[in-house]
Length: 264
Image 1: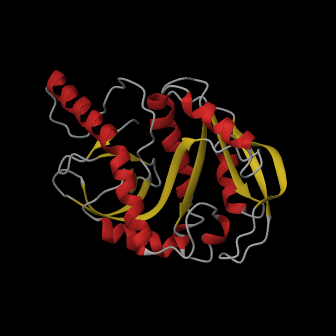
Image 2: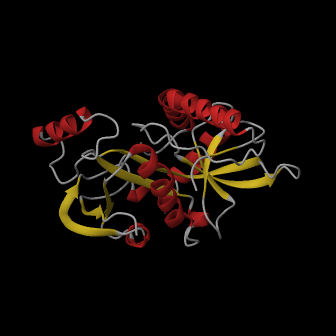
């Protein structure tokens, strides 16, 4: 199941398989930036979420969310434009009016622009298109940060620089996975299917991804289960590796690093 388009808004999206087909993954949007930022702020300040994250600031403010969304929208402009062009070409070539048509892959992308996990709450009765949805989490695949190397070290900076110089579509790029989900929806299998969907429907066919790594803080049982169910294997545990976070009230913690074994 590749990229789909909303027939009313022309927005590209990925859809999770059953029993979570009411969950979609979209790009960031400017038109509902305040609403999305509000939900993002709730999630990232939740005590079941923020202790397990390293990247976002804490406490997370609505302004942080708005700035982040604007940045991601800017970075996704070219991806959105190219996908819409592909879709229009496909429609013209096939002369098919079904808005659910799937777009044939054309060229490799260097960005995973599908980051926003949303729950559809209302559908158009005529087309079946999503009319309303709510932001419930995030998923990202970006060039890897090399957590195995010491924070702030020249070795880490050099590894990142070498990896970042590799051109789009190259099999040798090392990618890293990140995600979070609203605690209200934990335990429903949503993130497991979101990871599977982003890998199968975008990263592999559209980014030519072959190498994917992930990590989580020791004690994060939920993330561990999601990774194992998606064919990741633990390769190392870095003892007391994550720096202390006074804002989060968190001491130095150990990190588990995993490698993806490929599509299963």
